[in-house]
Image 1 (tube, one colour):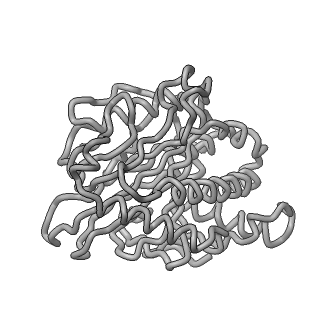
Image 2: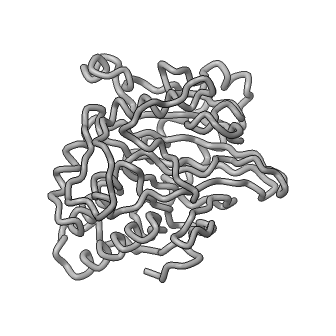
Length: 331
């Protein structure tokens, strides 16, 4: 693992796919991972085990979606009762209800669920996805990538639990029928002097986020010195960051860190972040004694997830006191 500063720490997680959690290699990787996520909340992970073909086909699928006529994509826009489908450019605002609309367009996907599954009766947040109405198979590469990253997240959870001295099953048991979601994103290039964000400074609300290498760039992370640093990532690596839910489960030991996107590259930026999130009925509270000064109300995953998704609309502002809505204090 490289030292912290103006670059994100790099962590080799090859050994985390092993069942030998007491081996020296495994413990070294787990310690490096914990160190990075407790210092800055972000890490560049290498040797993650996801086949390059799976990532390449996923990237091609995203490009295909955003090469499609907007007239076609607009047939399946997101709505408040079904947070799936197309998000037009500048459609969503920060959850606080303040600030300019973010400059991205997206296709929102959630854990694919059969409408006859009983969990759809238990929570309206589950159901089948909307898929673009095009003569191209988008679903297959998405589901292959989804399955691969689910496995990576499981390995990361187990490794972090070894460092927290927590039984991994306390978290893994909450990941059946998850509210995991993924966003296919397209950011148009913005003039260097523009004050329009691709995505405004925020923290992620979920458990953890994985982002495959982005050849264009534009993601920035705020470090402990209140500096915004570029999230440089090698071609075969992924960026990992802690979400609010993991921060809460860890009692504040793992940090949910502010980040933002500004695309001044002069060309479109496309990405596909994977947001791991527990089942709807899980109530999250610290699994270990919180660090000094860390105070946070228990968080009900389904209630808070619905609240934060709805509050993306300009006419809806959250009133949920149990979560921080991915915002941060800039002072």
